[in-house]
Image (cartoon, rainbow, N blue to C red):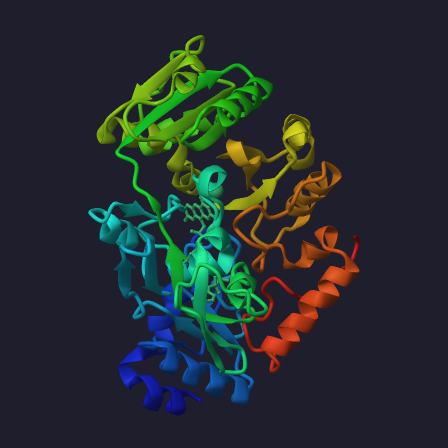
Length: 446
Ligand code: FAD
Ligand code: MLT
Ligand code: ZN
């Protein structure tokens, strides 16, 4: 297989041995695998050749973009059998200003797309803290969410069409950017969120959103989660142009101050620190300003101050990783169950240290548990069971990956899993695409 791959992509782009190491360790430090090789195709045809060669030889394929995924889906298992296909040489970006769309190679990095759009009058509707490394292909594969979902939706809402290599090596391509095209199944939507288990996205056509000329960010101190949720509902109901509502719960704000070297934003540490952002033309509506009048709060009107306020929320991820290897449980709850869920968390996670933050406007919390060893699933399972008990989802935006594959049966019914397997079998008949991720031998509870 390696000789075939070298002939296909060039020997320089088939890495082996120590050169594969950085592709085998995940961002969180919880998952460490081994690979037979890392292949770096230059485009869709080389990618198709690579998948075909692997499928014929029964060699597992792990697609990888920026390797910022948080559920262990971007790295292989420890058998050393897999070939990682890295999209790092596939980073082209072509903006279509007339259409308000962009065509990207799967390996294009989000911040490169943001830079390419800077003077076009358009911007991209999904933003997240890993913007300097995560790729558009990886974001499609995980259906990434981030901080603007309440306004523009997750990645699936941005995808107009994709080009992809399916598990049998065949190429499907829909990059024409037609806004209306009701000619059968939407393969782009199906591949979005498929976590590399059906094929490799090699390029995509994405919608763009209007570029606002003003942004106003507020960081506020709230006395309880119930109050923070009431504020969030008020903002969502009354503020046109609301771009995000984020939150850091409890002691998380002290951790980020210590670990990221930030000054405490408020004299008294808040029960919940809420960050809200409005973006649009001119000044924010009175409803946005009025919502904070009775609260202790800070306002950012310029880019530097804005960055300073966002740091309290965005630097939570690195701050937690500085003090230990977290079990990162990304979950959504119905809004009316969020407070009860958080109240019950300490029981489910005791005696471990827990930090909770997330996308309050989406009902999406990131529960980070420090203490248990990497392969200890007991705390994960207790938190996920609590999520199910409260009517939530065990994965809001990070995906299922390796981390939650064993737990998918808690959430999805027998019929849904049968449909998933039928789709997997049809698109990846040799079963080589990202084995062990998303679909595995699921213990079925639902
Ligand atoms: P990788 O990590 O390389 O891969 C992720 C998954 O997609 C794997 O299963 C992989 O096999 C598959 N994959 C990658 N590329 C392809 C492709 N071209 N075709 C098919 N499958 C592919 N996520 C959010 O949703 N919201 C956030 O707010 C957020 N913030 C983050 C902040 C930080 C600091 C970090 C480290 C991560 C954050 N993430 C967030 C998680 C992560 O950035 C996203 O999941 C992102 O979409 C992963 O992109 P990637 O290119 O790094 O993909
Ligand atoms: C975030 O919202 O900051 C991310 O999803 C990353 C994380 O969960 O740590
Ligand atoms: Zn998040």
